[in-house]
Image 1 (tube, rainbow, N blue to C red):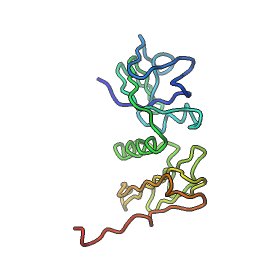
Image 2: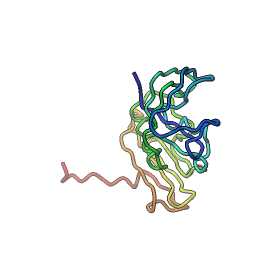
Image 3: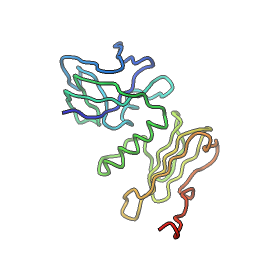
Image 4: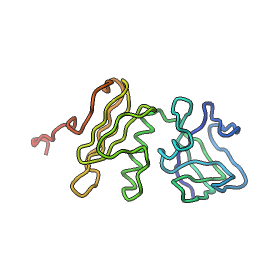
Length: 183
């Protein structure tokens, strides 16, 4: 049985001296400590191993022959099918999707509570009752996850591209009010 995972590489699909190819890549053994192809279930965990978006590239993959070690969502596998390269917006979208699908899992260190600034990789993910993020560059990617009184994510707002300007703090006040006539 397999699963969808995320893998970051050095530019050109290179990882620790190994050149991957689009499509299926196979090896004989998989252990998270030393063998196999490594990837992560949570896309944000990839940044622990490849912290600089500008010198890396991220792909969504399908993995089989899986071994997990429990340190984060990192896995090792014997079969890694590389499916699609993600741009930074798609990467953050996938990270938010992971958070929403796994609400009881511990948040990655790249997710902030209540407020933050966009990081060196040009994004911010903030969760809280009234989350806000300061854009440190034009075109940054910002994901605001507003929680209800029970701490569950009730609304998500994505901002990116031309709509994000350096020096502006974005908050949940940008959510459009629901029109009573739309009911």
